[in-house]
Length: 384
Figure 1: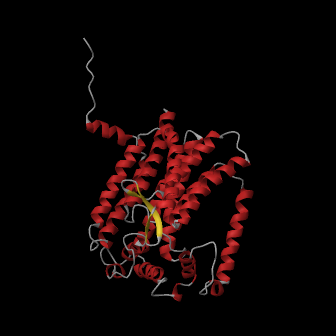
Figure 2: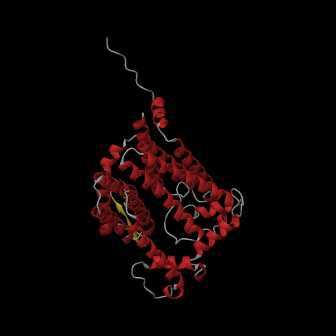
Figure 3: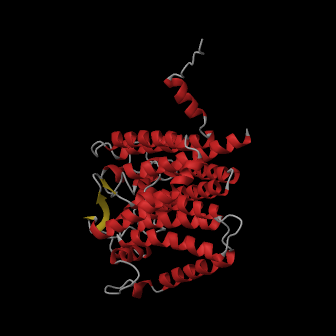
């Protein structure tokens, strides 16, 4: 008589999936998601269905997170080259016959309209981590040169669209992999020093460099205007400087404790442009003040720190590089968004993770977190 096989119930299956989640990482995400839902309700209550859509996007990202967390790192490594290849091919297709909106060609219709540059936020660190894993133990200068070429191709295509914000995120994710793979400091220090010197010269020469009619050659006109607006927002307070000025006013008016939930005057009188997307941190700072901002910083710090701990304990070079790069992506997201809203960085299209409205970015974040969870789970399996 055959043995009776009892299939697990759906509750048991879901329980086994959730059991493999990394606790500190899940806690950080829960804290940030709660803050995101709270400020989205306030800043978007008269903005159609933004709050409901934001909650739906979070649920979708959570589902993707749990699903990807069940994938072993070996499967992630297997899709690295195909995903990168498809992503670059789509970027080339966008350059040839993409859809143009508001002067930028970033989308393509493949049955549904997609933004291929979003794929590279994950595909880039996957590809470079795969490359260095294959070259483990015999790395040379040529291997780093190949990695830089693999990074430069999609970054160049994305900047041509133009999309400086996404290009910056893809560049940061790739450079993080290259750095953690063992790039020598003597190759890092010179370009950093050169960049700092260029910034000092730019600040000193701002009146002449930002004069009308001056062409910077390497940047689009709108990018030049953003840099010049950062150096002196008051040069066009009702135009290009309006975003930065209103963001700083909102954050400053929040003080230590903030004006209170639903009490932000700059927010609800609609002085803050893009108050549910790129500039939602200004609305958050106005209503929850410095202490609220510190709460967000603590949440991001916990997420990034836990991601780096997962990277340090990862069982292979591929997973170490991938986890470290994804952790630095979250850092770049938060640092660039908070910096541009606070007036210390140029305005670029970078959302604040789990806080800003946006379905595509939320799905990308869920995918990245799912990969981190997968690596953490693989580490625990190796230890047992």
